[in-house]
Amino acid sequence: MRIILGAMVGAVVALGASAQPASATVQERQCFVMEAAVYKDRVHVFCATPEMSLAVALRGSAELKAKIQKQIQDAAGKPPFYALALNDPMADKVLILANMAMAAGTMLQIDFEDDSRMNPAGCGAGDCRRIVGVRATP
Image 1 (cartoon, one colour):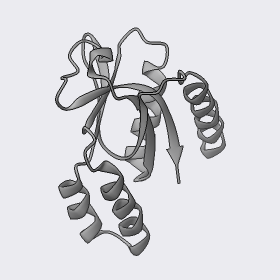
Image 2: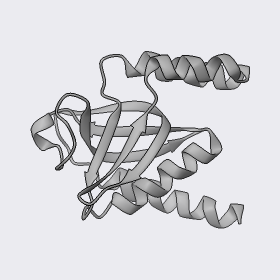
Image 3: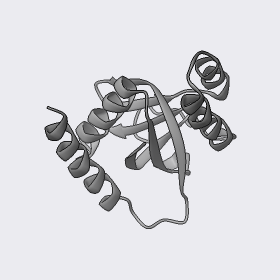
Image 4: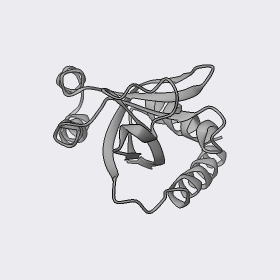
């Protein structure tokens, strides 16, 4: 089963990375996934806030603490929610990667559109941005 999941992750990662548009407003963020959800109009990923990450790190191994410290530094000034319209071709693949990262306790790198005018329906301008790519990171 591990081999099948590894192949599936490789395919999903490649698809997400190739779907990223060239845009001056695309940013990236390391994300410790706390939630992956599906709503009638969108899918979203909730990344741990720096405070949540710190609480997880205090209970974890030295390796986990180092990963979460990087996420805390990377998260400064970035929103905690990332979303795609439900009909976006990447939506199901993003959910697969988010759920796998959550189960494994690993990070995702999320590339996102920084302009809130590009947000899908239901993705609030103050705390959410549109996903343009997702990569699994060790």
